[in-house]
Length: 109
Picture 1: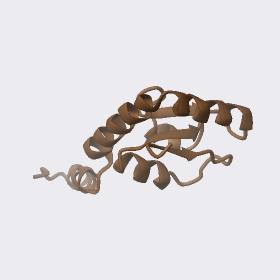
Picture 2: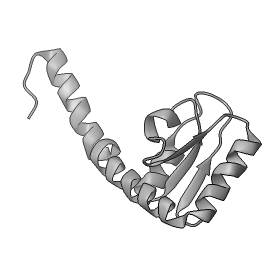
Picture 3: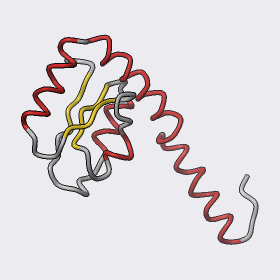
């Protein structure tokens, strides 16, 4: 399971940096299906969701990755590509600069 990280937080609003770090490292993510992790994980593409507080679903998801290790690798690679394309720090800076420019009536460059 070295290619997969679990983020089974049971409280909505829990900060989602763990999902970002995992995808940035090329790891698939098993996450509780609520809160900020829903914006990070794409179910079946970059990881999988389980119901919050469901030990049974979490155990089942872990077992699926143990039985299908290529899946973890494929999803981890997809997660890293998505992280670099959408969530890497330079992208946030460009988005913030664009928002500031639009609010001030200037053109971002």
